[in-house]
Length: 232
Image 1 (spheres, rainbow, N blue to C red):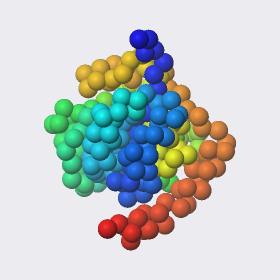
Image 2: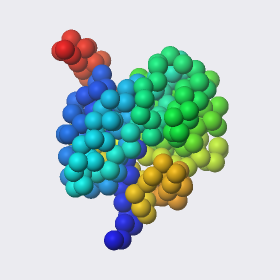
Image 3: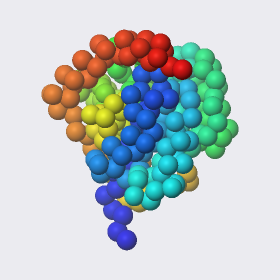
Image 4: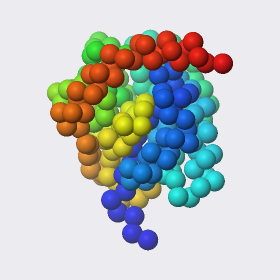
């Protein structure tokens, strides 16, 4: 089977994130509809949604393959871990967060490093050192607020010689499949980094998507409060 041209989306959320609006099943179905072959599920400081997605995909070969992960909140901002299956506490330093991810055999990524108006962006004082320490840098984020932020992330990755990751950062259905890396085969833990390094970043961001991102950014605090109130 020819697997060239597979879409790998490395940043997604479910309802196990405080601001996620997609159940694990809904995320997988949306990704399938948008031609995503493999996606990383990276809920905020929790692996529960990722493990549920992995379970569902294991039962249904028609669904995209799943990389279980986490978007970990450190004292200086967020970092992503791939192939993480156990929770890691919030509030660690960046260095300790990276160490905890690698302690599980995982790989690390610095997400949306320049989206300064967004919750969880890495502190400017830590940006260069974090980029040097992680395995890859996210250069295309589907929820970015302006093209210049992705362009700055690309320059950051170049400065540190890091592979270029891309992810939709989807929290709702309309955001799924917006940014991805085109790779030659489905990744495994040992092949992910090489595939990303050799892959091609693509995204579907146009003026309408940037405008929608600003609107959703304004709604995010209200969504987090509503989710907290309604959570059982």
